[in-house]
Each structure stands twice: as structure tokens, then as C-alpha cells.
Image (cartoon, rainbow, N blue to C red):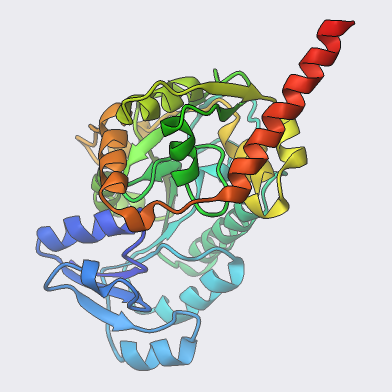
Length: 341
């Protein structure tokens, strides 16, 4: 198949790029070329800013594709642009939405593609919902060949997936574990979560490309493994050969005292603090044989090994570190006040 990925070098899309290239597909990437060194040989690149519609049109010429996959569309204006660009250029348009679009909390923790979409806590998720609605309207009214994919927490070796960190990524949490300092976990750490290795996600995603049963449909792609957040952080500690010292704090309190730019309301109340169990039966009917095979304890060891061997990724975050200490001190002070009464 001739396939165009808009993006193609991110956490999710890089694995898809590698697998499609290895399978011998005629693969094209449209991006700014910031990670050209990571693109497999034989993959064509269109170096452009997708936001510059006229420039993209010039580079596309009269190209046609079996599938166009959008990984960096976040607001309706961006997918409206894609509809204009690719209405008569592709047999399938695959839009990457988000499982955070599901209602939080949903009426049931068991989530499938029919679960209501609504997220009062996160503008990012509401924008994804608006994009989905626009695309499905285009499918119903104009036959635009859309497929919607909703990933949840997908990760790769570039970073350890966590629920609470600052704007500089995961390293400071790992640094705290290595130094024997307590790390913050929302609630009592018993809510269930699903983490999916990007290569596993890619195998399910690729099975939807060119798949006639996928048109006009939405699919979620996740691992079947459910872990509590306590288990997740404990696995991170074991990967570091340390015992993680978990410190539990109510999600509402964390949201109230965190800097707004960390987006903890969306990340916690709108996503990671809510128990969810995803049902991927629809995907498995469309892609027989799909199965995520990477357990989190295996995946996180790969992440930790990669980070420890790449010092440039070990970015210190003193603001986040000091904030964690203040949160812990405040809760301990409150405990002590009540213990004295």
C-alpha cells in the first residue's frame, strides 16, 4: 500500500513507521524533518509544515494514497484542513484521537467504543471529541473515508510513563526513586490503568489500514494488562533496582496546588486517576490475531535502560522536585496537627 503519515516520528507513530517500512510498503512521511536520522531507509519524506496548506499542496502534486494517517491533529481547524487536502487523495483517512475523550468518570469502568465521549476536565480531550464529530459528519454526509483510533497511555523507550511529573518529563521522578525520596501517587494508588508498548499498538493500527470494515468506525487499541498505579510505580522502582517510596495524596489536592501549565486536572481528574478497563473486542474482530505481548515490567525495563544510557534525556526539574517536597511537608504537617488534638 501507498501510505502517508502526517508526523511519523513520535512516540506512537515511530513504531508504525518502522513496521510499515519493514513490511515493504510505499511509505511517505509529512513532517518538519526534525528527526530525519530516525527514519528508516527507503521511506520517502515530504519536509513541510502541515499548517502551511499551500506549501503542502505544492509538494503533494497529484499524489494519491491508500491511507493517510493524522497523528498531530488536535483541533477541528486542523482536521478541516486535512479534509480539504485529502478528500480526493486517499481511500482511507485515519485520525488519532484519544481514550481520554471518554466520559470521566464513565457510568461503568468497562470502556468500549460506544462509551459516551465527554470530558469536563480537559480541553485537549474536548478538542479531540470535536475533531471526531467533524470527521464522522464528513463521513455520513460526504463519504469522507474516515477511521478513528483512540489510544490510551502508549509509551516507548524514550520515557517512563507516569501519572505525575513536571513539564520536563519523567526523569525527576526517577531521580527521586534513585535518591530514596518519596514519589507522589494520586489517591490511594489502587485505581486501575492500562499501559501499551508502542510496537504492540502499531501492530493493531496497521491491521486497520486498507481494512474495509474500518471505514466509518472508531477503534481503541490497548494492552489487556491492567495495573494499579501502586504496581506501576513499584515496577519502575524494580527496574531501577530500588524500592519506590510511594506517598499518596488526593487527586483534588494535587490539582489545586500544581502549576496550571502541568495540566494535572486533565491528566488526573480527566484521565489517569479514574479506573478504566478497556475492551478491545471490536479491534480483535477487525484485526484477527491482534494481541499486545509486552508486559509493563518488561517495557519499563527497556525504558529505564534507555534513559540511563542516554544522559541527554536525564533532564533535571528542580521546580517539580521542590513542589513534591512542599506537598509532602504540607500533608505531614496536617497529619501532625490532628494527631496533637
